[in-house]
Length: 231
Ligand code: DX5
Ligand code: ZN
Figure: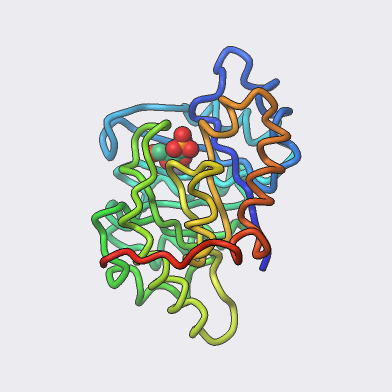
């Protein structure tokens, strides 16, 4: 299984954002959190700032849109060069059309669900997805604790994905991912891991990326004790 480490620059140093991008170039994807202060109580990068970050990043960018109007705005993040655009099911009135519109610009198209949204809400759309993002914190802020009660949902999604014929969407987790929690999510079936504070608070972000990757690989998770969590 391919493991992808996706640093989130939400809590990176804004004054030196381009130096911060260089620090994480050994990872697989850059995770760009876009918040509109409506869908979540926080605001992040403007379209202009996002465009500049996407242009300057040497690794592909996944724009994670925590905005209330993805059906209108998601496509512009594909047009500005995001290699992947992820929007929230809870905010979309026509997810299938929006996924299609993103793909028409050559970007990967993904859906995210919040902790309280059950997997069954997104299940019918699974064949249309390039990636499913299961939030492991309430979206809005970095630095929160990993919600261990999301593990059964990750397992459920992973099983459904493995039963899909043909193209299988990636399964991503976002929120509270650290050296302590990444193996839990990996063992439940996640293959793509967003990490903000774990990477940017580390003394050596490149070493942390390497350590997270190692902690998520099959060999290290095989030795873990079985995990029992009530659904
Ligand atoms: C939260 C964002 C996350 C956040 C993760 O709403 O979607 O991407 O940056 O930060 P950590 O890894 O600190 O939980
Ligand atoms: Zn995010």
